[in-house]
Length: 179
Image (cartoon, rainbow, N blue to C red; front, side, top):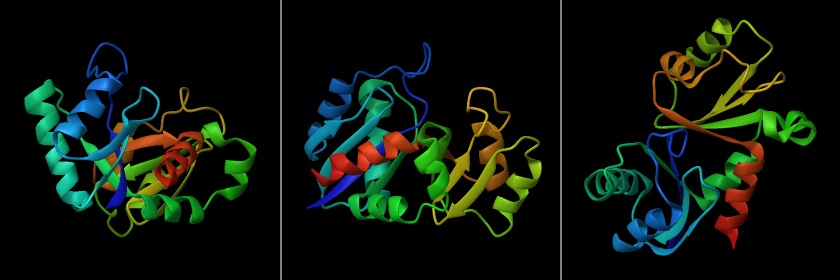
């Protein structure tokens, strides 16, 4: 069986889209996912399955909506993809110097040609964007909370939905997927 990580979008942020990690693990187990484990309260599930990532996204999204009343997107990557994301980080100096201000945005699709340049051109601050495949790396040198590079702007310019995790969390997810 392949190890996967599922990242939920916009859960446990304020009063909306609340989910207990125990409920998330139980949801995965009820769907036949093996060895379900969670990381942090931000909606990260690691498990084993023979299903494809695309099928798992649909399955988890539908089950979360029908069984938990949680309507949110799931972004599934294999452990091998997580290894590639870490190895292919186009911002290694920033990851080493300030990992909490490097965000990896997991996307539903590969951005269209020119989309990353369009996002970078829309940025008025010091943030820097790089993308490879279905991931974008964004450096927030002045902090994520103060930035005007919001998820809405990112999704508008890249043309697809995404969910972000800081570099520290990406490394923890990778380690959990290797365990």
